Length: 318
Image 1 (cartoon, rainbow, N blue to C red):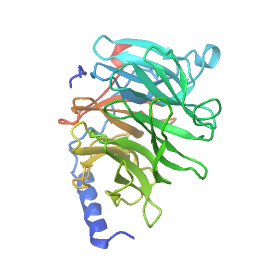
Image 2 (cartoon, rainbow, N blue to C red):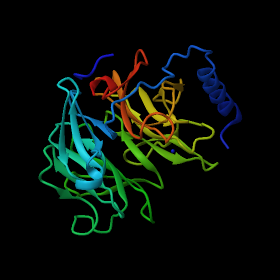
Image 3 (tube, rainbow, N blue to C red):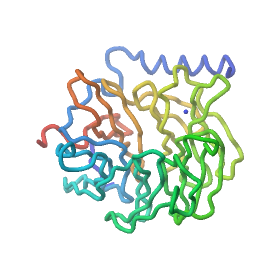
Image 4 (cartoon, rainbow, N blue to C red):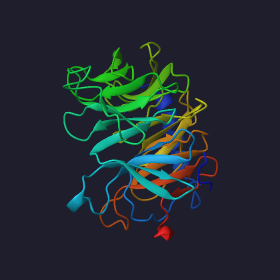
């Protein structure tokens, strides 16, 4: 596999999806996706994001020395072909997203109430966008900021309080506009005119929805049972496929909600799929639990065509 350069429906619809999912998980002893999670080197990594050209990723990393000498949840980058890691910011911070021109990150603080910030790609020029001493002092619990494809608008969500919902703003914190209330985990379509996100249906189950960024055209795409763990929608660069986390694994579906299919397997909980710029690879992280043989929070790459999975940091590299 190449290393790149580069949240009651109609009964019959629910039955169809259930049958489809069952078919995906009953392929016998030889499912198409990997069932054994490859062993990773002991490099803790989570909440990854791709650099604009696909050569580098940024992610949250806690070094082994953090308990004694450094903060948890630092921002690091890794060059996939040069095999080099570099710390960008000491943190603590969460959900970094790399801007399309490569010169800035948006992220939120790892302390309650959480606030949005941007910083340069080298960790300087820190700008606070929400909370006290910012352009938006009344906005708190602001999380999961994401640049639009043209780099002139930010998407984010407010995950607690009366202001809960999905918003956009300019990168300097001006012109905050609400898209929809009581929804979370938004992701841009490549057009910058539509978003995918997690909302709750009439049964109070989280499902994947889409909506125009102006707040029109809301549509529910999934009708999945046992969906408490459903989240992290991510739209492919061509706008045709949505990846998301569900039932401890990564799934794909068409941008219209059809062809729901499982694409990873194995132990642990797969989280936050993110498409590479060329649409050929998905970066995700897997949380392992005590007694499972691997320690928590490891980064992996999924080849979208072959469904082969490999660790970003292979065990053989140590």
